[in-house]
Picture 1 (tube, rainbow, N blue to C red):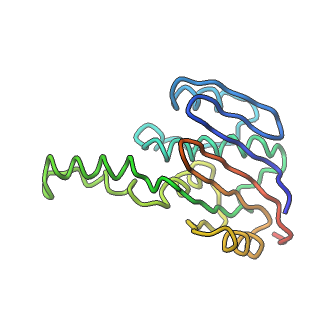
Picture 2 (picture 1 turned 60 degrees about the vertical axis):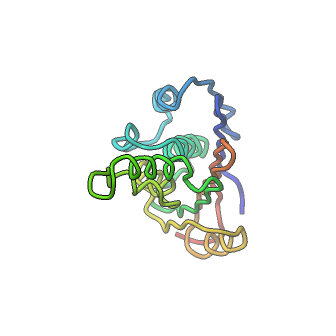
Length: 176
């Protein structure tokens, strides 16, 4: 496999490997505005961004930046998406639990449950970019490589761990 695009977001910076793009930001909305104002930014559906939690926002933004980094090789229709979330959506789980304790089972905000699922950040990234290949939330790098090489000519991996989010787009040997 060959890396054709890669992006990383930390607490205050974002960068793309191939293109050398670099951003400093104060919050994730600021970073969104900087990334999406780039002329090379692919078509994106950001309608869910405002209400997303921090893991989802970082996954969406790092995926967009990695797509930009791919340049003309970016093909959402031929890309699989694999994700791993080392934080396990801990912030979203805490928010859901606090609301549940404060408001009870019948008065609590049920919409807060969905982001507690570990696969939500990568699924929202797929929706944002219109990725049509297979998507999976995985545990273990060997399984990720096996699925990537088998099902799609391109694969985007998203890793969220310790306030750093990385997306890498790989070209596989699989034909479209």
